[in-house]
Image (cartoon, rainbow, N blue to C red; front, side, top):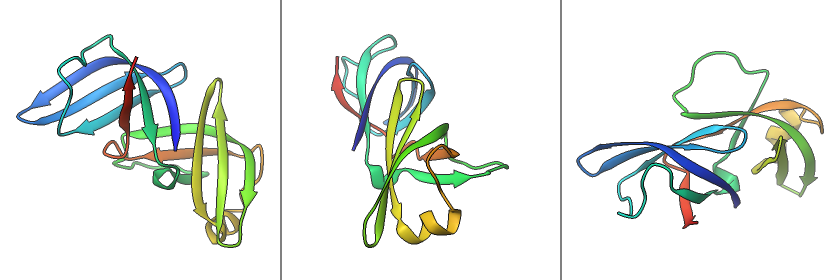
Length: 131
């Protein structure tokens, strides 16, 4: 799991659905949530989390996707296992881990220092702690 600090900059609400927009040092992120704690409001600082297996990777990507969170990052470190591969991704002070299959890593010819686009669905981002 990856965690990073962010501040809430916008909250949209309709019935029980919330779309929350966050600002980190490097990126603007969006989260979709059915429940939102009453103490969470614009300006609140939080710790966000995302499972490494929920972070998809695109290389040399162009075009439109419905993913709200498309982050341009650099591959900092690659750890290969028998079937899976862990990618340590960075941009400025922002760090993110992605776990993909070793077959995908090889097919994409991913290497350290490659620039990739990390894709995170807004429903996969969550608040782990209110700061």
